[in-house]
Length: 359
Image (cartoon, rainbow, N blue to C red; front, top):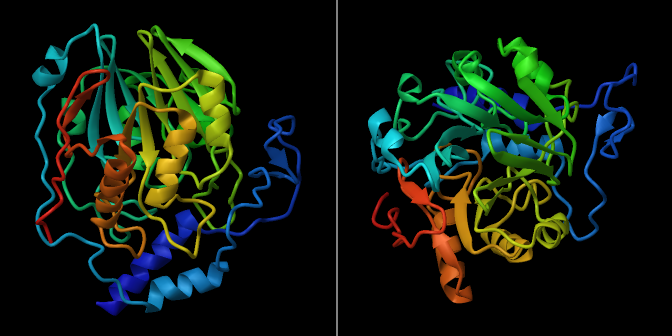
């Protein structure tokens, strides 16, 4: 058991660690304000507590015991059909939770995907690595025609090879941070369908305006390509409503800048999971997720980045329970939808603490 776990962690290292390699600095992204010293970088953030060193983190992953990080009971999933999706009001904006940070959106009648991961594991290998807790609420062949696909960064729990290979010719347009286009081309996506964005750059497609906005994170899929591509949060504007998606991020003042620039959001999909004192700069605690949401001037806080993969040391319920308690204490409207649940932006709903009572 320990041997299998160690093998799993070796796989994990390939997407959440890495080392900077030296070489030719020639890059088509050299003019980006985020590109510094041959790599992409976060702006300085003196408020971020110091984290542990890389090998300290991995030693802990390999040798420390985990308790309660994987559910024993079945995570509830609401199965979906293509017919159900097609029947959703074409004059509204809908968000469907697929698991972790993966979402299907129906925006004014057109379907979009955010960071879709349908694969069994978030790993460079099909046989080892963090395995999903539950099946997706629908299969890839059940997806309706996809107009657009948005990626926040290239980590394995957000950019999934089998998913992209299946969707390669089935998505009309891909919206990605700088450098991620080459990843998609390797997976069979036609180059002309991919549009890259630096922070604050915007584009419009099928009546939807998308803006790549700052995030505090990192990138890489091997031990030698750390920060070769950019990471981003996203603003999605459709039918007079604004949706924010945080991607992966530590807490930083960029959230306040985004809130000020866009004047608030009808719905904010906020990262809430895989946090730890060992890496405070790249993921937010529930308390920080609330603070970021308040900075953004959001109306509804929607919890993402949890309930599907074991990526940290907190219990699998901890992000949900802590965020629910904080939202109640601060008078925040919270959305913690079940997998497969449909949320219609701007419509009233009753939120449920579905994880309570599950082991």
